[in-house]
Amino acid sequence: MSFAELGPDSFTASVDWGDGSAPESLGSVSSPFSATPTYATAATYQATVTVTDDEGGTGSADASARVNYVVTVLGPLGDRAKDVFKSSSTIPVKSSIADCDG
Image 1: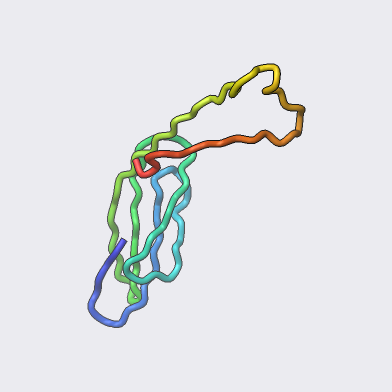
Image 2: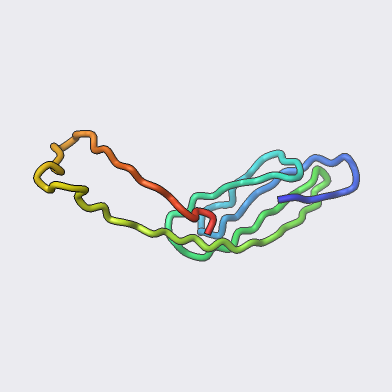
């Protein structure tokens, strides 16, 4: 996110992620800056960023984020008789994540 203002002001920012949680204070920021949410469920969220200068002036911008989660259930990977693990044992798993940016 970026912003501009004439003069030597300092800035703070906050983000309302649109998920029902309290807005997150980002503290002191300069332009450009970034912030990353973690959403608990798949949905479309409307996030609002508010930047405030040291004189009390504010500016806000909105952005939509569509979050999709795909869950894949892993099945046995070979001989079912050998694919048995004891409780509390370490299970080797390989996974890959694709298209995380939606």
